[in-house]
Length: 132
Image (cartoon, rainbow, N blue to C red):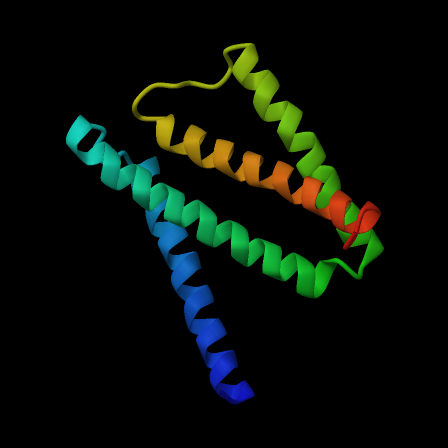
């Protein structure tokens, strides 16, 4: 496949991921996602797909554009390092609502936080252990 086709595919897929993420979050914000038990599996599946897609796009952007920029790389890592205890402490001190209307956002934020922790572990492994 030539580079023009690859570029077109990248832009189309990136647009779909961003569009899907916006659709999911807007529908969640306006409480348009059903919270009944029958819909839970679909919403969970769609939410996971959205988070995974968004996270992998973010990781690809990080690797391609930010990993070689020490200041930007440090900023991304600082945000992640701050986000992990922030999320956990807010939950511990009951500052995060687990009500049906907010659970989609909490789940989304939680998944992004978990994958961010995975990212830090991966970066540490890659940097300090490498291919042994």
